[in-house]
Image (cartoon, rainbow, N blue to C red; front, side):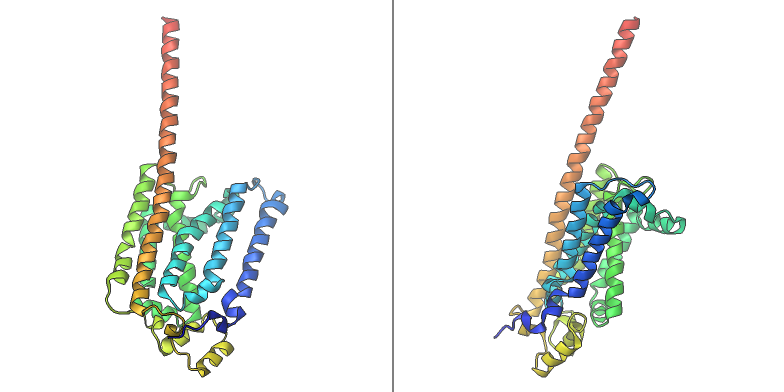
Length: 310
Protein backbone atom coordinates (compact mmCIF):
# COMPACT_ATOMS: atom_id res chain seq x y z
CA UNK A 1 0.00 0.00 0.00
CA UNK A 2 1.26 3.48 -0.90
CA UNK A 3 1.52 5.85 2.09
CA UNK A 4 0.86 9.46 1.05
CA UNK A 5 3.13 12.26 2.38
CA UNK A 6 1.72 14.84 4.81
CA UNK A 7 3.00 17.61 2.53
CA UNK A 8 -0.14 17.29 0.40
CA UNK A 9 -2.03 19.09 3.18
CA UNK A 10 -0.02 22.26 2.63
CA UNK A 11 2.13 24.59 4.74
CA UNK A 12 -0.76 26.18 6.68
CA UNK A 13 -2.12 22.84 7.90
CA UNK A 14 1.35 21.52 8.76
CA UNK A 15 2.81 24.53 10.60
CA UNK A 16 -0.19 26.63 11.77
CA UNK A 17 1.45 30.06 11.17
CA UNK A 18 -1.36 31.95 12.97
CA UNK A 19 -0.91 29.84 16.08
CA UNK A 20 2.86 30.44 15.90
CA UNK A 21 2.21 34.20 15.80
CA UNK A 22 -0.04 33.86 18.87
CA UNK A 23 2.73 31.96 20.72
CA UNK A 24 5.31 34.60 19.80
CA UNK A 25 2.97 37.37 20.97
CA UNK A 26 2.59 35.51 24.26
CA UNK A 27 6.37 35.39 24.67
CA UNK A 28 6.67 39.12 23.89
CA UNK A 29 3.92 39.92 26.41
CA UNK A 30 5.73 37.80 29.04
CA UNK A 31 8.94 39.78 28.40
CA UNK A 32 7.14 43.13 28.63
CA UNK A 33 5.36 42.26 31.89
CA UNK A 34 8.27 40.54 33.66
CA UNK A 35 11.13 42.75 32.42
CA UNK A 36 10.31 45.89 30.43
CA UNK A 37 7.23 47.06 32.33
CA UNK A 38 7.84 45.28 35.64
CA UNK A 39 8.41 48.50 37.61
CA UNK A 40 4.85 49.58 36.79
CA UNK A 41 3.44 46.75 38.92
CA UNK A 42 3.37 47.13 42.68
CA UNK A 43 4.96 44.21 44.54
CA UNK A 44 6.70 42.85 41.43
CA UNK A 45 9.98 40.94 41.67
CA UNK A 46 12.73 40.25 39.11
CA UNK A 47 12.06 37.20 36.97
CA UNK A 48 14.59 34.38 37.44
CA UNK A 49 16.42 32.42 34.76
CA UNK A 50 14.64 29.30 35.97
CA UNK A 51 11.22 30.89 35.44
CA UNK A 52 12.17 32.16 31.99
CA UNK A 53 13.46 28.72 31.00
CA UNK A 54 10.28 26.96 32.12
CA UNK A 55 8.00 29.50 30.44
CA UNK A 56 9.88 29.35 27.13
CA UNK A 57 9.92 25.54 27.30
CA UNK A 58 6.14 25.51 27.87
CA UNK A 59 5.60 27.76 24.83
CA UNK A 60 7.86 25.67 22.59
CA UNK A 61 6.14 22.47 23.68
CA UNK A 62 2.71 24.07 23.26
CA UNK A 63 3.55 24.96 19.67
CA UNK A 64 4.90 21.46 18.99
CA UNK A 65 1.71 19.91 20.42
CA UNK A 66 -0.87 22.22 18.82
CA UNK A 67 0.90 24.00 15.96
CA UNK A 68 3.46 21.69 14.37
CA UNK A 69 2.81 18.67 12.08
CA UNK A 70 2.23 16.72 15.31
CA UNK A 71 -1.21 18.33 15.54
CA UNK A 72 -2.09 17.18 12.02
CA UNK A 73 -0.78 13.70 12.78
CA UNK A 74 -2.95 13.70 15.90
CA UNK A 75 -5.99 13.73 13.59
CA UNK A 76 -4.63 10.77 11.64
CA UNK A 77 -3.18 8.57 14.38
CA UNK A 78 -4.85 8.16 17.78
CA UNK A 79 -1.45 7.26 19.27
CA UNK A 80 -0.10 10.70 18.30
CA UNK A 81 -3.22 12.31 19.78
CA UNK A 82 -2.53 10.58 23.12
CA UNK A 83 1.11 11.67 23.01
CA UNK A 84 -0.19 15.23 22.48
CA UNK A 85 -2.46 14.92 25.50
CA UNK A 86 0.38 13.59 27.66
CA UNK A 87 2.67 16.47 26.72
CA UNK A 88 -0.03 19.14 27.05
CA UNK A 89 -1.47 17.98 30.39
CA UNK A 90 1.57 16.52 32.12
CA UNK A 91 4.42 18.76 30.90
CA UNK A 92 3.15 22.06 29.48
CA UNK A 93 0.72 22.69 32.37
CA UNK A 94 3.26 22.32 35.22
CA UNK A 95 5.96 24.13 33.23
CA UNK A 96 3.59 27.09 32.80
CA UNK A 97 2.87 27.22 36.55
CA UNK A 98 6.58 27.36 37.37
CA UNK A 99 7.37 29.78 34.53
CA UNK A 100 4.95 32.48 35.69
CA UNK A 101 6.36 34.45 38.68
CA UNK A 102 4.41 34.32 41.95
CA UNK A 103 3.66 38.04 41.92
CA UNK A 104 1.80 37.63 38.61
CA UNK A 105 -0.22 34.74 40.03
CA UNK A 106 -1.02 36.95 43.02
CA UNK A 107 -2.26 39.71 40.70
CA UNK A 108 -4.42 37.22 38.79
CA UNK A 109 -5.86 35.86 42.03
CA UNK A 110 -6.46 39.30 43.56
CA UNK A 111 -10.15 39.23 42.61
CA UNK A 112 -12.01 37.60 45.51
CA UNK A 113 -14.61 35.75 43.41
CA UNK A 114 -11.99 34.35 41.02
CA UNK A 115 -9.72 33.44 43.93
CA UNK A 116 -12.53 31.56 45.73
CA UNK A 117 -13.37 29.56 42.59
CA UNK A 118 -9.71 28.84 41.91
CA UNK A 119 -9.03 27.75 45.48
CA UNK A 120 -12.07 25.45 45.37
CA UNK A 121 -10.96 23.68 42.20
CA UNK A 122 -7.32 23.44 43.30
CA UNK A 123 -8.13 21.63 46.54
CA UNK A 124 -6.34 18.27 46.18
CA UNK A 125 -9.39 15.95 46.23
CA UNK A 126 -11.49 18.18 43.97
CA UNK A 127 -8.67 18.79 41.48
CA UNK A 128 -7.98 15.05 41.26
CA UNK A 129 -11.64 14.15 40.70
CA UNK A 130 -12.31 16.93 38.18
CA UNK A 131 -9.20 16.15 36.11
CA UNK A 132 -9.96 12.41 36.11
CA UNK A 133 -13.59 13.05 35.09
CA UNK A 134 -12.60 15.47 32.32
CA UNK A 135 -9.88 13.17 30.94
CA UNK A 136 -12.15 10.10 31.03
CA UNK A 137 -15.10 11.94 29.46
CA UNK A 138 -12.92 13.42 26.73
CA UNK A 139 -11.76 9.97 25.64
CA UNK A 140 -15.16 8.30 25.81
CA UNK A 141 -15.73 7.28 22.15
CA UNK A 142 -19.08 9.02 21.59
CA UNK A 143 -17.82 12.25 23.16
CA UNK A 144 -14.42 12.32 21.44
CA UNK A 145 -16.02 11.68 18.04
CA UNK A 146 -18.45 14.57 18.57
CA UNK A 147 -15.69 16.86 19.85
CA UNK A 148 -13.52 16.16 16.82
CA UNK A 149 -16.36 17.11 14.48
CA UNK A 150 -16.90 20.57 15.98
CA UNK A 151 -14.29 23.32 16.20
CA UNK A 152 -16.12 25.07 19.06
CA UNK A 153 -16.55 21.85 21.09
CA UNK A 154 -12.92 20.89 20.43
CA UNK A 155 -11.70 24.29 21.65
CA UNK A 156 -13.93 24.24 24.75
CA UNK A 157 -12.95 20.71 25.76
CA UNK A 158 -9.23 21.28 25.15
CA UNK A 159 -9.13 24.54 27.13
CA UNK A 160 -11.25 23.09 29.96
CA UNK A 161 -9.09 19.97 30.15
CA UNK A 162 -5.93 22.10 30.19
CA UNK A 163 -7.34 24.27 33.01
CA UNK A 164 -8.16 21.10 34.96
CA UNK A 165 -4.52 20.05 34.46
CA UNK A 166 -3.36 23.40 35.87
CA UNK A 167 -5.62 22.77 38.87
CA UNK A 168 -4.24 19.22 39.20
CA UNK A 169 -0.62 20.36 39.38
CA UNK A 170 -1.24 23.50 41.45
CA UNK A 171 -1.15 21.85 44.95
CA UNK A 172 2.09 20.06 44.03
CA UNK A 173 4.03 22.87 42.35
CA UNK A 174 2.79 26.31 43.38
CA UNK A 175 4.57 28.35 46.06
CA UNK A 176 2.07 31.22 46.19
CA UNK A 177 1.30 32.21 49.77
CA UNK A 178 -2.23 31.29 50.88
CA UNK A 179 -2.83 28.83 48.04
CA UNK A 180 -3.49 25.08 48.47
CA UNK A 181 -0.14 23.29 48.86
CA UNK A 182 0.91 19.75 49.68
CA UNK A 183 4.14 18.81 51.42
CA UNK A 184 6.34 15.75 51.83
CA UNK A 185 4.65 12.36 51.70
CA UNK A 186 1.25 13.94 50.95
CA UNK A 187 2.66 15.15 47.63
CA UNK A 188 3.90 11.67 46.76
CA UNK A 189 0.55 10.13 47.68
CA UNK A 190 -1.30 12.72 45.60
CA UNK A 191 0.82 12.04 42.50
CA UNK A 192 0.45 8.26 42.87
CA UNK A 193 -3.33 8.58 43.28
CA UNK A 194 -3.47 10.75 40.16
CA UNK A 195 -1.71 8.02 38.18
CA UNK A 196 -4.08 5.36 39.48
CA UNK A 197 -7.26 7.32 38.75
CA UNK A 198 -6.72 7.65 34.99
CA UNK A 199 -5.58 4.04 34.64
CA UNK A 200 -9.12 2.67 34.01
CA UNK A 201 -9.65 5.01 31.02
CA UNK A 202 -6.28 4.03 29.51
CA UNK A 203 -6.89 0.34 30.22
CA UNK A 204 -10.18 0.36 28.34
CA UNK A 205 -8.42 1.85 25.32
CA UNK A 206 -5.53 -0.64 25.53
CA UNK A 207 -7.54 -3.83 26.02
CA UNK A 208 -10.59 -3.22 23.82
CA UNK A 209 -10.46 -5.56 20.81
CA UNK A 210 -12.25 -3.35 18.25
CA UNK A 211 -11.70 0.22 16.99
CA UNK A 212 -14.02 2.48 18.99
CA UNK A 213 -13.32 5.93 17.51
CA UNK A 214 -15.18 6.57 14.27
CA UNK A 215 -13.13 9.67 13.49
CA UNK A 216 -9.94 7.58 13.38
CA UNK A 217 -11.43 5.01 11.00
CA UNK A 218 -11.80 5.47 7.27
CA UNK A 219 -14.94 7.20 6.11
CA UNK A 220 -16.86 10.46 6.09
CA UNK A 221 -16.37 11.13 9.82
CA UNK A 222 -12.57 11.26 9.39
CA UNK A 223 -12.82 13.81 6.58
CA UNK A 224 -15.12 16.00 8.69
CA UNK A 225 -12.73 15.74 11.63
CA UNK A 226 -9.81 16.82 9.42
CA UNK A 227 -11.63 20.10 8.78
CA UNK A 228 -10.50 21.21 12.24
CA UNK A 229 -6.88 21.54 11.11
CA UNK A 230 -6.97 21.56 7.28
CA UNK A 231 -8.27 24.55 5.24
CA UNK A 232 -11.59 23.76 3.53
CA UNK A 233 -10.13 24.48 0.08
CA UNK A 234 -7.32 21.96 0.65
CA UNK A 235 -9.74 19.41 2.07
CA UNK A 236 -12.06 19.80 -0.91
CA UNK A 237 -9.15 19.13 -3.25
CA UNK A 238 -8.16 16.00 -1.34
CA UNK A 239 -11.74 14.76 -1.36
CA UNK A 240 -11.75 15.17 -5.12
CA UNK A 241 -8.69 12.92 -5.31
CA UNK A 242 -10.63 10.15 -3.58
CA UNK A 243 -8.75 10.41 -0.25
CA UNK A 244 -11.18 9.08 2.33
CA UNK A 245 -9.36 7.82 5.40
CA UNK A 246 -6.24 7.82 7.62
CA UNK A 247 -5.14 4.45 6.22
CA UNK A 248 -3.75 6.34 3.22
CA UNK A 249 -1.22 8.09 5.49
CA UNK A 250 -0.15 5.16 7.67
CA UNK A 251 0.20 1.41 7.35
CA UNK A 252 -0.62 0.83 11.04
CA UNK A 253 -3.97 -0.95 11.59
CA UNK A 254 -6.55 1.23 13.37
CA UNK A 255 -6.86 -1.14 16.34
CA UNK A 256 -3.09 -1.28 16.92
CA UNK A 257 -2.89 2.51 16.68
CA UNK A 258 -5.69 2.82 19.25
CA UNK A 259 -4.03 0.39 21.67
CA UNK A 260 -0.66 2.07 21.20
CA UNK A 261 -2.31 5.37 22.15
CA UNK A 262 -3.40 4.02 25.53
CA UNK A 263 0.03 2.49 26.13
CA UNK A 264 1.84 5.73 25.23
CA UNK A 265 -0.32 7.74 27.61
CA UNK A 266 0.45 5.43 30.52
CA UNK A 267 4.17 5.05 29.73
CA UNK A 268 4.72 8.82 29.34
CA UNK A 269 2.70 9.46 32.49
CA UNK A 270 4.65 6.90 34.51
CA UNK A 271 8.02 8.29 33.38
CA UNK A 272 7.00 11.86 34.25
CA UNK A 273 5.51 10.83 37.60
CA UNK A 274 8.58 8.77 38.58
CA UNK A 275 10.78 11.82 37.92
CA UNK A 276 8.43 14.08 39.91
CA UNK A 277 8.14 11.64 42.84
CA UNK A 278 11.93 11.29 42.88
CA UNK A 279 12.38 15.06 43.07
CA UNK A 280 9.70 15.39 45.76
CA UNK A 281 11.31 12.63 47.84
CA UNK A 282 14.80 14.16 47.57
CA UNK A 283 13.46 17.60 48.49
CA UNK A 284 11.46 16.21 51.41
CA UNK A 285 14.36 14.11 52.74
CA UNK A 286 16.69 17.12 52.53
CA UNK A 287 14.13 19.24 54.40
CA UNK A 288 13.82 16.58 57.11
CA UNK A 289 17.61 16.34 57.40
CA UNK A 290 18.01 20.13 57.68
CA UNK A 291 15.21 20.21 60.25
CA UNK A 292 16.83 17.42 62.26
CA UNK A 293 20.17 19.26 62.19
CA UNK A 294 18.48 22.45 63.39
CA UNK A 295 16.73 20.62 66.24
CA UNK A 296 20.05 19.02 67.23
CA UNK A 297 21.79 22.42 67.26
CA UNK A 298 19.03 23.95 69.36
CA UNK A 299 19.20 21.02 71.80
CA UNK A 300 22.97 21.42 72.16
CA UNK A 301 22.58 25.16 72.83
CA UNK A 302 20.00 24.46 75.55
CA UNK A 303 22.30 21.93 77.20
CA UNK A 304 25.20 24.39 77.07
CA UNK A 305 23.07 27.10 78.73
CA UNK A 306 21.91 24.71 81.46
CA UNK A 307 25.53 23.65 82.08
CA UNK A 308 26.68 27.27 82.32
CA UNK A 309 23.85 28.21 84.73
CA UNK A 310 24.47 25.04 86.74
